[in-house]
Length: 281
Image (tube, rainbow, N blue to C red):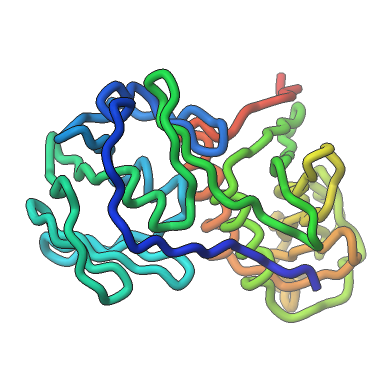
């Protein structure tokens, strides 16, 4: 079985502001310019960004309770409060230079502190804050891009998804959410089969690609073709996951499929997904 790795490096100091902080106009994460309808702001020479911009694209989970914000990823947890400079990081209190605040229904947080707490490297260059995260490793291969392909009635679409956090999260779902191992279905296709009960249609193909653009691991998601009487479909799982490289099949859940689609949508909305082929008429 492939293994899921993620780097973890905890920082315990707050950083001195640099002149570049005051000139930030855009954010790059893993060399991708992050889409946002709100520009970064400067407070006391600190770059402040909407919480969603940094949490979604670094893969941090966010939990709200009243005015307290909890961000967690791997073994690291930080708790912040609106309009309060005190932050609790893994149970230890520290002081921020700038307190989180609300503006136009958005919560702004200091990007350098959040990013470096969650193991990322941060540097500034010509008005851009550049954040670099640890790549996903699959059998010691660094993953550069996730190639996602799906077909429709009149053609297909191929997208390249960048961003290490998205690679980590998607691979984790494939690894941890697969169910019982099952036999391969008798019939499975890229297209709908309206003649054979128990046949499956491929919803999507997911290729984790190495730095030199070779496939390291491929997963395919299939769904049961439904236009048949219910009694003919009894005993067939609604979704199947195919580990293409090992040629193993597993039951997959609807919730896992929805979680994958949500991540793909987030990657697209935030600028981390690029369509490289579209043959849909």
